[in-house]
Image 1: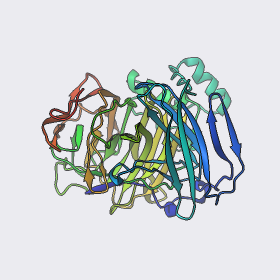
Image 2: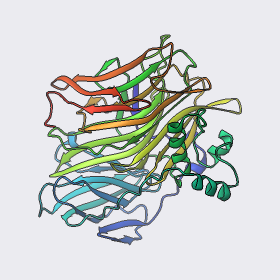
Image 3: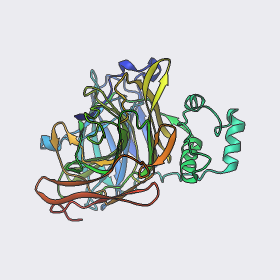
Image 4: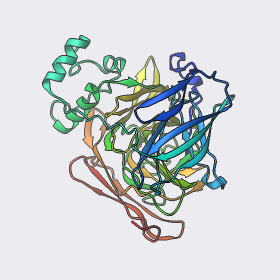
Length: 446
């Protein structure tokens, strides 16, 4: 099965999720200030973006506003390096660059397009102090925060129903909330972090994902097997890994939690559908510029239905991701919740899943994603970790490695594109923690 990481056609979404295109565009980016133009949404003339970067290998942010749901392509000498980034439902674009030269001024052309409209930018990278905004720390949940929440919202999140929680953009409370401090703390962290709700974008990416075997060329991590109905929820926290440049370009990866869609089930045939959300971490080098793309996405894979770009994120951000089954009015919904705990950006949506939600496997994966049908390099993520890696089976919350009666598969990413050894390995980190290590034997300098 192919899991196409692209954008949902939002015909199945409510009109509340649709965003009216804005007519204000950021035309220049300078340190600590910006100049905006009022060009109409159909404008096609070039707009100049001046971007300060910190020389060396430090990643500097590039952010501006364009057409909501646009796909933005960097003009490169070779189509194979036609690197893409995306605009969220509000038209916001965020990616990172690094440039080795200390006194280098570099230009690139960027085209941002929706189905009917295009906007062109000339990016002028120049050395200087970057307008990087330090990440806000993720607060540790406290009783005073809980009391403040109750007074402000008029209900106790520790006892409220899942329906009430979802109405307030809070994920379902873990069944082991009162007995598992790690699980409770992770959930409270997501619940109490102020939410900036982001609707799914219409941007179509070119990322494709795949199923795998125990020794895989595309997956690394753990998968629990089961029979139909074994699993109904999966969740985890992770820090978005900061990529390092490698000689090979482009390179693509994703980090996600999911249910179904793998070859790991106890009663084949296994479900060919998948419900997952996670983050993308991509690297590409062209025009003397290293580009880094970090963003959140979700995927309801039904008959190769494309998945959805959500919002841009930054390396080092802490994520909370979960997917689960939600029964409402006789209809089965696949529910997605992913939150950047540093910025509060959150997507909380459900889509009708019919009988496609089987629950015969659960996964915590870093994936070497494909572009179209081509498999490229695995970017250097160094080491990464998932915590609070858990699932719900029946009415019981379990760590990923506590499921009894079914095998737990440890998946090693092996081989591919001239390599003779492993690309990435994984290990149990104790409790509900999973460790991942970039190896890439035979490929690239570490």
